[in-house]
Amino acid sequence: DEWRTVLAAFQMYKAAYGDLKVPSRFVVPGMAPWPEPAWKMKLGQRVAAIRSTGKYVQNNEGRRKILDDMGFLWRLRSPSPGKKLDGIAFEQVYDALKTYREQVQPTGPLDVPANYVVPDCEPWPDSTRGL
Image (tube, rainbow, N blue to C red; front, side, top):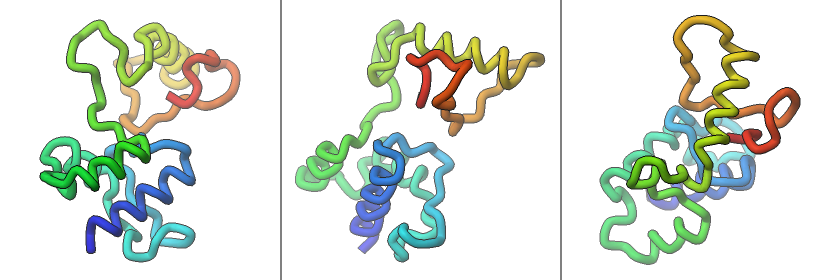
């Protein structure tokens, strides 16, 4: 069923990327080693549906626990302003944006794609890599 397909895609995503921080626009590649039933699945949209409506997990603590154990992020942001976002300090985000401005987009309105990942190399500050 669809839940099993989503779960298999999550397992492969975690194996490939080390976490379940699935970008909102992420689509499962249509090739091995991704599970064939999940090929071309809009996994980022499934994550959004789980977060916003409880799809697949509503009234099902077993499924919720499975996702918890895998490290699923139920919220993107902390509920109160000024606090850390999923353990990411404001300074880390600021440093990443500052470096992005210098290295990637030196002019115009700052426009960082939602699925952008900070590279794991110089000149990016160590504390920002992988954000």
